[in-house]
Length: 300
Image (cartoon, rainbow, N blue to C red):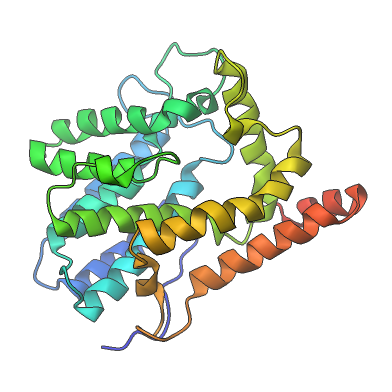
């Protein structure tokens, strides 16, 4: 089957992305049980909506519910391309399931427990991956997942860390390594291809400021921006020197499964990401009044 287009959904609505996941899984694995999709999205909404025991609703401005849904939609589209291509290693129903959990929980480390009222969840930026790994274990254990399944999801979550050494992640097989690379790819491309990416950088800068304020030491270089303008100026460098090498080399170019049709068609995710980086570059070069106007017009 030749896929002509990526699947679209309103990423402000969990149900819309859930419907795409259901349809895609059914097309790839028509005889497999898809009940996990309802459980995964239901748990995600409970956790991020403040309905999971002991935790508050997510309060970060950039790493919010839509940020996760952008990544989830990208991952599902990538899985569709991978599955239809019948590429090796073969995507399995189990790995689709665990990968979905990986992307839905990869930023659960920003959640605060009840009683944690000093600042917002962005203060956990430096440790949010480790916190996500721990949260994932608690949630999936309660749902009856095996230790091996939980470890697989934890490894997938670890791929999303900015400073992660992929060689140190304890993948259990080639297929869960490929799913981990897919989760990392979807996390990066989902957010950077967002139509509102430029406008949302103000929120990201606010998170970095809070993270630096709570770090208890000199701000790490990844948060050390004099102001929003400096973040804008350095974002194209981040794309060129970090994101692109990670997608192409570290993640084994899994983004190619977003090509429609596969293997030589357009990649709308890459196109939109590159357009957004160009827009950031233009905003960084123009005068302050125009920069402010551009950010307002790009805001959701």
